[in-house]
Amino acid sequence: MDIRTAFAAQNYAKARSAAAPNPQPGGAESGFAKFAQSFADTLATGEQTAKAAMTGNADPHALVEALANSQLAVETVSTVRDRVVEAYQEILRMPV
Image (cartoon, rainbow, N blue to C red):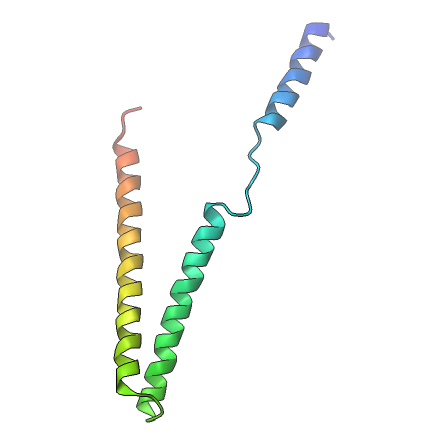
């Protein structure tokens, strides 16, 4: 084996490990996970309040507030989804 090939392979291995991504604990994944959990909690709270209102155990004002929060959460998620789809379509339209 040629010594230059061995050096090239060693340098490639070093560069590959140096360029490997290091996931950060507070990165985008954890932010999205928090966002998704908050969305699920908002919807669950709205459902619990609606069930309580149907059985007469909740204040009508609490029901209206829970429904408004649920509506806002759904609108926010749909807006984020639309923006992500729009960005993806822009990427697809980019010339290579």
